[in-house]
Image (cartoon, rainbow, N blue to C red; front, side, top):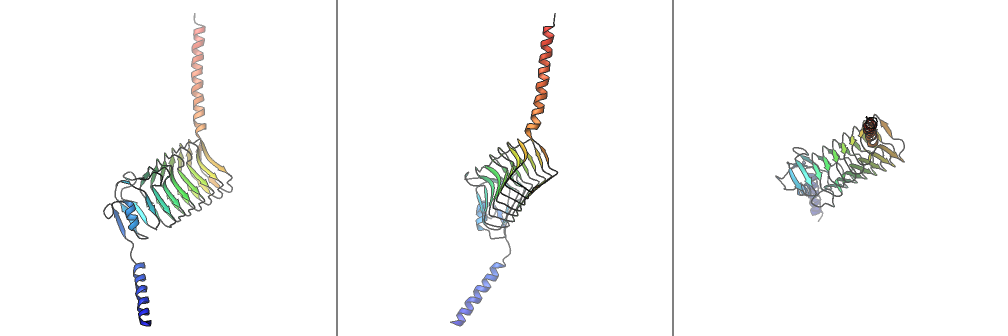
Length: 273
């Protein structure tokens, strides 16, 4: 019995060592799997999924540390939500996920939703025509770089209860509520983002202390940068120009010119022979 137990333990030890040292695989969509979601389900941690150009109608749920990249970028690599009430891409309870080069659209909830997930990298994605563009909830130390979050029903990029994230060189425009919204989130870095033409606030910090805002261009929003109950933030070299202060003087100038011309013509008529 002791000998059998020894061989059994030896077998499982060798099996664990063999499987734990398996090299990361590269999976291709649609070559190996027809959908991204199917590829994700069959992937192991640290695998890379390469997605060829195309229009994919699905919702992708990620709960393992994987990388998903498009071959030709967001213009021709589009994921449209098949279930509108769910995020197009949902990342939940996992660390070190990387998503690069997709357009995500068609969700009433969010294009990319990151929940309780840390140390992720999200580069060169477009989240357009969703409920919100990119949402982070209780997620720390993620990097969002060179993404576009435009024309969403609520927020472009929304962080809640999230610490130590970097938002850099993102374009956040024409959203129907706020551009970038931080709620109860601290020690985040907002650097060189372009936040324009949003219906309300360009950047709003709500109960969010100790963040750094540097070099952001915040033009033609209802309000530029708004801090509410948010102390000890550092704002450096940001450019702001609110809608109300752009449009109003121009309107007044045109009104003044029109009134002047009307008065001039009336006076000419009155004093004409």
